[in-house]
Structure formats: C-alpha cells, structure tokens
Length: 334
Length: 236
Image 1: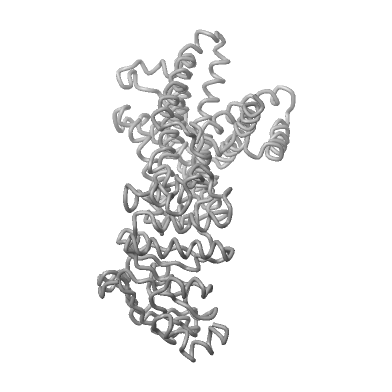
Image 2: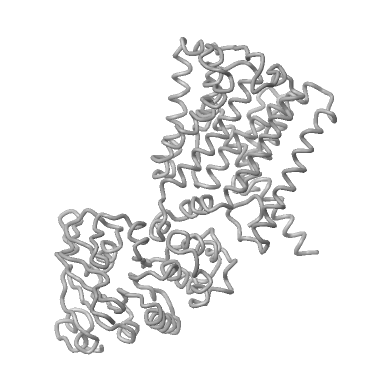
C-alpha cells in the first residue's frame, strides 16, 4: 500500500518505514506552510489560500468516507455547520469559556455522526446518499428558520474573546496566521488519516466496505468500525467549520447547505476519492478553477461543471490517480 | 474421531413465506469427523449451513457448538467460538491483498497462523496480490483460507469445489482431508462432486425436500436405495 492510499496492494516496505516516510513528508509540508506567509506578501492571496484549505479539510472529510466506508455523502455540510454554529452560538451568548466552546464544537458533531453512523453503516447506495442529504438539509432548515438561535437566514456575526488557549484571538482573523494554523491542521489531519487507514481499525473498516457479510463471518463487528469512520469524517468537517467561523467571526445557514456538501464531493472526486491526499488536491484545483472561471464568465459554474464532466470521463480515479498511474509508467520504463 | 459432539442442529426449521425449506432437521457432527451433506438442488443443504452459521436466525430449532446453545448468537460471535464457514459463491475481499485479508481475519480469532494457512493452501506466492486479480481457483482457496485462519474447531463448507476443474477439486479434497486430520477440525461439507464426498467423508447425511432422507457411512449411503433413487442415480 502506498503511504496515502488504502485500496492498493501493500508495498514491500515495513510499517515502520512507511510511518517514517509519512512523518518525513508531513514535516516537510509543515515547514512549507510556516514559510508560506514569508513567501507570499499579498493578503488577498493568503486569504484565498486560507479559504482553499478550509475547503480542502471539508473535501477530505467527504473523501475519507468514500475511501474507508465506500459511502457517498450529500450531507457533510451538516457537521461543518454544526462545528461553526456550536462555537459561534456558545461564544456569542457567553454560555461557556471559548476553550470549552472549541471542544464542544468538535465533540458534538463527532458524537452525532457516530450515532448516525451506527444506522447509516447499514444503508448503501442511493438510499444512503438521500438519507445524508435529508439529515444535512434538516440542520439547514433549523438554522434557517430558528431566528432566536443565530438570526436565521441573516446569519450572525460574533466577536471572539480576547484570548483563546492563551493566544491573542485576533491573530486567528489575520490571514497570514490563519493560513499557517489551517495548513498545519490539514497536514496533521492527512497524516492522522493515513495512520488510521493503516491501523487495525482502518483495515477492518476497509474490509467491511469491501464485503460486510464476509467481515461478519470472519468474526468482526460490522457496525462500530464504519461508525468510527463517520465520526472521524465529521470531526474533520467540524474542524473546517470551526476554523471558518473563527476566521470570519460569522455564521450563516449556508454553512449547512447541501450545495456545500455537493461542492466538497466534487472536489473529492476531481482529486481522487480513492486516495487520502486526493480530495485536498481536488479542493485546491477546484478553488483555483472557480476563481479563474469567475474572472472571465458570469456563469462560471457552467465552466466548472464542464470541467468536472471531462475529468470524470478522462480521469475516473481523479488527479492523484492519474499522477500515480503516470509515476508507475515512468518507473516501468526507467 | 472422538464421540464428543462438535456441532448439533436440533429441529431446525426454515420457512420462506408458506414454503418450508427445512422441516425440523436434526444433524449431529462428532469432533474430528468430516461429514458430507448431500442431496438434490432445493433439498435445503445451503439453508441448513446458513442456519448453523448464524446467517439465518430467529427460526425454530436449536444450534449447539460443543454443547453450548448458540442459536441466538450472531455469525461473528459464533466465529469467535470456533465456527467458521465458506460460501457457495466466492466470498472474499476483492480490493484487499491476499495476505492483508487473512491478517484481518486473524485479528478476530488468533494473532498467529496466517503464514501457516497461506502455506497450506498454496497462497504464499500470491500474498501481495489484490484478491480481485488472482484466478478463480486461487480465489476459492482464499475463501477457504479465510475460514481456516485461527484453526476453527468446526468448519462449514458450502460447495468449496464449485467451478473448479477435476484436478483442482481433487487437490482441494486432499488438502481438506489432511488439514482436518492434522488440525483436528470438524467439517460439514456440502458438495455435489460425489468423488470428493466419497473420498474424504467419514459419514454422510442426505437431505431431500427439507428432511433427512438417510444417514450413514459412505458404503451405507451408496447402497441405500432411497438415496440412489432420489439423488445418486444408478451410476453412483
């Protein structure tokens, strides 16, 4: 198995070597992130990069569900929104300390997803997709209609407390700081997912994805491992939602909307949902494409849609799948 | 073979709507025995394996493993008690490598023995191959290997030789006989290849229309006129 993919043949290298390789890659990526604000002076560019990283986290959470559970979700924005709303509402109303609000904003979506996962894991195909869509839209409707919660469809701006975890919280709304924070979290999340995929629980979840009946008959529970994957996936989405809410100091029902879940799924497919790195790369490409198309055409979604159709037809395994195939071809020829 | 009972089904019933696929079947397999379960299509053989393995639950009848009532236990719980099965249709993990899926199987029952099982079933050379990319015969052996990891005490095999060539079937029969002896595994074998059944089974149970038609050793079954008429025919 290559370092960042699940469904391939295990490589001959030992788990220790693979782990060391992963750690080395992660360290290099972290250093690159720390250097970014020194290399890029434009605040606009840093702000765009920050938003792209939020998208990458959400896309990674959607892709991880496809990779580990073989399930497509159209409701992942529910956990993105829940993370943002839990933090925003708790802080705005002063219901608890900001640090506790952060923990609640991460724990609540994770727990909800685990409980839903116990049911969702038994449902496959279109029914699963529709169920996730329904759950996601239910959260959207609540946020949209419940004005007392966070001003309904107007959304709600809120101020951060002066310090969070001992740090000056205004720094979290500075793109040159947030880009490093978000990038660091993304890299650590990708590393964690790769380690999970290679762990016992990750491999059992992959076996359940492949053939749940056989997994039962070799002695494994087929509900808990997929539910844990749902929970991890929701945690990632919640982190993205929490970061975005903190960065903008603003929450709105659109954070729950199915179109956000759909965009994240498109990013995952474009990048290659069969690979842990794929959705994050897809998110960055999607973001650049969206920005580029938006400059030249009013109806830029049509351009993005056309590109998606082409990518799906030409690269069914996404950008990372194409790069991987090219890499193997080069190695064979060398 | 000892006199101790390894697995027992008592009064097993299975209904599909108004149709009774199993009509109160009793079956007993003693420790170390290889028992053949034969009969024409629709006799209820695979259904009986499904009930014994826990694929089908909540029907009248009792299933005992080593004297313990496991009727209410799920398949994974029965597996951890030493009851393993293979399937009529190849039932493996196509995206995982041969070794990876055997390793995953070992985590539920025993930490060791994966290399041994791969060696016994000639899968070692294929260890790193994704299961979807190996031949059908190799997939059948992998299916059997998944059941054998952890040396189960009872093995239910549903047509393990289905789709294999004559040579492959005989090779599989030899492996089964050998492993059952050396590992002291009790086997209940559903198989249509009578050469395989007659060559390795200690005893045979014949099902017909959801009921036990006959029981006995190979010679007794071959000589039983009811079995010849219902299933074997005059060429047996």
